[in-house]
Amino acid sequence: MGIGIACVSGKGGVGKTTTAINLAAALAEGGRRVLTVDCDPQSNLTSGLGQDPYALTTSLGDLLSGRVAARDAILATGWDNLDLLPATPDLTAVEAELPTGLHRETLLREALAQDGVRLAYDFILYDTPPSFGFHTVNALAATDYVIVPLQMSGFAVRGLKEVLRTVLLAQGRLNPELRVLGIVPTFVNLRTNFSRQLLGGLAELAGLRVFESVIPPTVKIQETSLASVPITAYAPGSKAAAAYRALADEVVRSV
Ligand code: ADP
Ligand code: MG
Image (cartoon, rainbow, N blue to C red; front, side, top):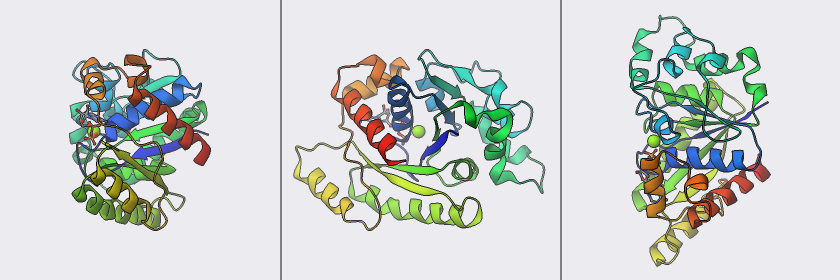
């Protein structure tokens, strides 16, 4: 049964999509069968894994609307063990088109339970939009765990409370087993006192794991977004690739 992990944060630009792509790629490189699910209409995970969101004819929107089955919406990527349930910009319109009275918030969970899709993978990674609306709620209903990428700044730390409140709500109403797996510190420059102090403060937050594998700021990761290739393939020997491999190891040990 594929273990679900959703990258969630109320903020944009903190490394959610980058973490979903590269954690998935590192797990796949290590021999795990991984499905990535793009729940963000911006479709950055889809383009980051080499697909053109404007050229796709079948995507997550069709699955949520009941037009296709999950296995017909899932694509192979150019990398072994790594599949993609893609998004297109049309995903924005899906919520408004759904008939009323439907179990809207569990559509994704139900769709992935069909045809043994969840059984075909070791991990299912969900990327979510920078809000707590329909698509993030569907991911929270479908997943087992949440990972919170946190950009090391004072504001980001404040935003964390909102994520935790949303997870608690989803736990209560939709998914009692939902757990926060941990915080992934992103854009961490350990050479600065500021980053070190923030990390120290984070570690004191009650009850939450802060992953030891922190992600450094690097131009190599910016380049991967343009190249549409995971860091583990784009620059296999880079510090950033090593950081995501280390994160994958920590994740495997902690689920
Ligand atoms: P989110 O999904 O939270 O909006 P992204 O993962 O798309 O954030 O990252 C936002 C931007 O920052 C992207 O252009 C990405 O390439 C860049 N980025 C992400 N992580 C890093 C990093 N560790 N170092 C440098 N740039 C990064
Ligand atoms: Mg994103």
